Image 1 (cartoon, helix red, strand yellow):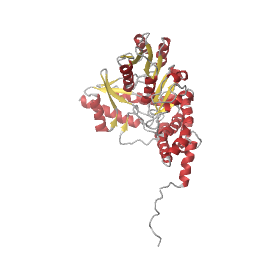
Image 2 (image 1 turned 90 degrees about the vertical axis):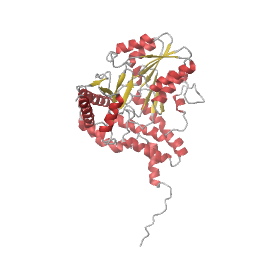
Image 3 (image 1 turned 60 degrees about the horizontal axis):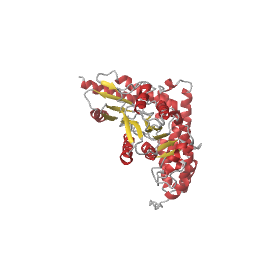
Image 4 (image 1 turned 135 degrees about the horizontal axis):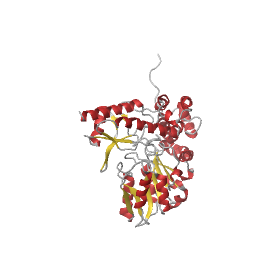
Length: 447
């Protein structure tokens, strides 16, 4: 009788598996054998052909098409995640890419990281630059918008008395960075209180004027949040930037909630600096980001981490951060494949449609109020809502406890609401579930 005792585990991966991983790493996400093409090419191409003749607004409402996209995600049916403005889940092919690169890395980290996977950064830089509409020599790959923007904020040459202009609606980490420079170096940090939604959200001239009136001859830098994370307002970045440049100031743009969501090129914004997270609407691995600096500005910006050539005009000086996660970084490539296969304008239109779908239903309910513009020029995926009788935290807790719906409470002096952000994997049935929950809670308060 044959022995049933298994052979001892050798601790070594089979040679064919090791060779496959090595070839995958060398070929990368931008080859004809990418994970995306293996998993989705045939089905997605057929789905795209079926809607290619339709205008964007009709494609946005074609549930057969979007069901194909939705199957590319592995989100839990137990919790309805409507906080994709914070961080989005990665598609299955992105998760698989990270796993494969991680397995390869752990065969021999210092070899596979620095001699194999590190070679994949330049093709990735080129692909990100293509999406951004810029030169690869202006793109640095980092871990999130906070790192990208803090690098710029702390690195831009400013002296005591120089003024920086932002708003009370900018992201907290950016506000804190300017406040820290103010404390340490004596710069002057000024904020405009746009007071959304009381401020005329649908009047870009009024927004530009608010910035202009706050500027002085000492204003050297203007900070603009492209899409306000608190309530989804799209800012008139280009107009503000043109005004600021005419007055001698440079412009930094926080694109954390716009890149991978809206169909634009960074140079279209007329800014000097731009930072974003890639793990939001691009659905890249969690903990990935990108920084863009206009080429003629690179040399003057100090890197946040030490560099032997801090005044180099080479954008790569900002990537000298020590040991990083190469698997996460290389997983960005499959997220770019996923994003480009959908199409930028198609994705933007769908997410605006999803926001409009739920907001147009809850705004009719007694005691319910919206705080985001309904126009596509001034909003896209993010919508905000409040309900009489509930604080934002109470409403958020009720939605999760009773309906397992995850949203974000916003508690500012002039803005108290819930932030609701669907993504391409969000179905109409998901939004009907949310609308029904809001309706039941509102009815209970008004009974």
